[in-house]
Length: 141
Image 1 (cartoon, rainbow, N blue to C red):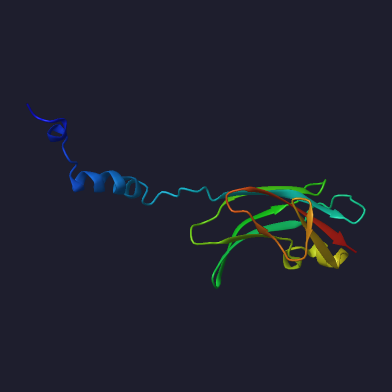
Image 2: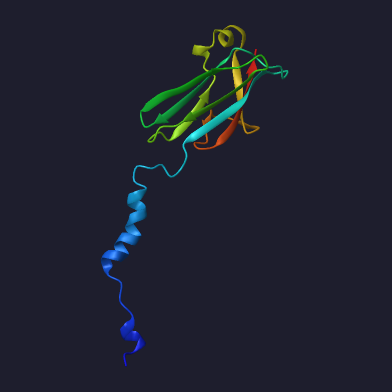
């Protein structure tokens, strides 16, 4: 009679390697994490009234390189929103109210503040890649 130990077959190393490596190979070229990012918010004056027709620019950045992804304009209430797919290799998504793209801004306003998810920020506007972020811009005359 054979012992129970003799009936156990040892797994071959090739099978173990395939089981461990196959998931990595099958995901090759797939982006595990979504890079689809949504940014929304309002552009207002100090009193809180919305400012229409202000250009809001979505720009992706990586080392020594930038790529414009989307240009949207505020509606009559000052609201805007946009969804972009940030290309692989780009580590930052910025949302900008650029005076260069906004003749109305340069004619009527001198500066602005940025609020990210309701919190005032001193810098500008890196959005969460793969998430949803609220950016509000408050313009000063």
